[in-house]
Length: 336
Ligand code: NAD
Ligand code: TYD
View 1 (cartoon, helix red, strand yellow):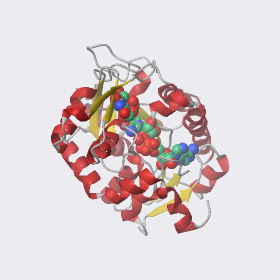
View 2 (view 1 turned 135 degrees about the horizontal axis):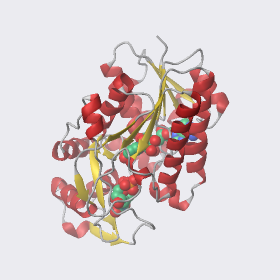
View 3 (view 1 turned 180 degrees about the horizontal axis):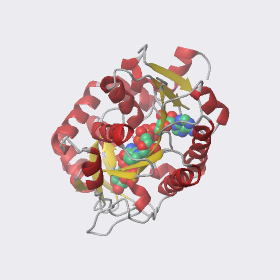
View 4 (view 1 turned 30 degrees about the horizontal axis):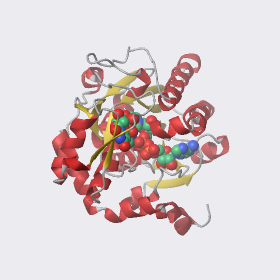
């Protein structure tokens, strides 16, 4: 059988997904295509180094040559995680977001057509739906109304995927998930940033009033959802995934402080994010009904496991914070 091409497998969710599929599908071989941007870290897959069913290719999804090279003689599917993923960075400079998230997806879609790839999964986000008021949930039928450069670039990619499916019959599907947390998340996102700062007794910056709501899902539950789509998803469909766990940012901050035994004086209210989405909340009943999937890890258990991971992997944190992780590729493979 041809291998599965996973893009962005050195990032947070991609690395967890590769670990998940290699464990759960003993016949599957994986090619991991990753450009190793600041968010890509080979150490995220250090435990799988030398794995006989995993191959790493350094390359850019927006470069057709790199993509062709990774596909080689053919692949059984493409799961596209590769993206610029941080909203704050997209507000500072949207250029890399358009290049990777939009152009990169288009290049992958064209390659999927050229090589007649039998399955294309676009890993997207609930942020494409925009922001909710105090009530209601995003369903797969909610109109796209992205509000940040990041979510706009992801929505553009989603529309391209659906257009390629419609126009060319490309066997594509889209997953849209809420906020993930868990091991190997780059400490720029809320949960890993706050855990790593609190472990060092540093203050944590809560944007604005901290009353913004996010739905939190443990990363392995998201990986199980993507895997269910790979196994049982219907072509042309969109599947929402979520943790059924809405929390305001301040509630989440207090939970982390309590679990880590740190004082409330470490909370610092800082200037709000421009255009900050107020509330995300997801209806994932379609995935539950059609795929037999449901989120399994409670916030309490997931947060405890995540904190424990950051506590026991202090060298991972230290090399990320110092920037040393960026030289792993050179050390292993020679010059970038
Ligand atoms: P991440 O930022 O941790 O990782 C992104 C990975 O993509 C990195 O390894 C990076 O090197 C790689 N990459 C970036 N540009 C590339 C390019 N041009 N070519 C090849 N590789 C490239 O992101 P993440 O949090 O793991 O998110 C993965 C996917 O899931 C993204 O598409 C994101 O939009 C989506 N998503 C994330 C969340 C979340 O909470 N983190 C929620 C829903 C959906
Ligand atoms: P983040 O993890 O960046 O995910 P997203 O913006 O994609 O939802 O942020 C989660 C929430 O936490 C969001 O409402 C912004 C807020 N936030 C803070 O209050 N302080 C911070 O330092 C960060 C990174 C985020």
